[in-house]
Image (cartoon, rainbow, N blue to C red; front, top):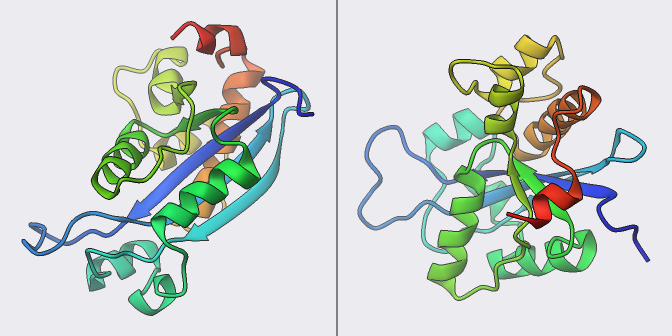
Length: 193
């Protein structure tokens, strides 16, 4: 049995996107789910995963490939969105673990895509907007992007920016930075949201 509140899932998604307006016949869909598991007791990142998701209602644009490194051919080898959500629940205890993302985009994208596709939302209610938490803890006038926060914290950007797996891993490092300074919320704080 897993110790309650010990592990945190850090999630970062990449979605179909375009340079300019979205084509009328397409929607933004998750094409990669990056996941970093942080052991809050041991204060270290213990797992990293990248789940490719096959889009149903859009195609990967050249702009999206340039940004994320993902191609249509690559995401075509992924699982369905429903299977990805089920995998998060089954293998990463996403409904019972607290989770974090850099900003609210990832949470809102999951909510919207679950609603539109009739897929069960894979997370519990204990979510932390790590971007807002970082800005508040460091008393910054504006919320920085992930790469800017890493520079501010004196941490390296590991891997490729806009790779869901690499970004989740880097956000995990920022979570540990906040945890080390006592600025990360406790399980009890998250329970009262």
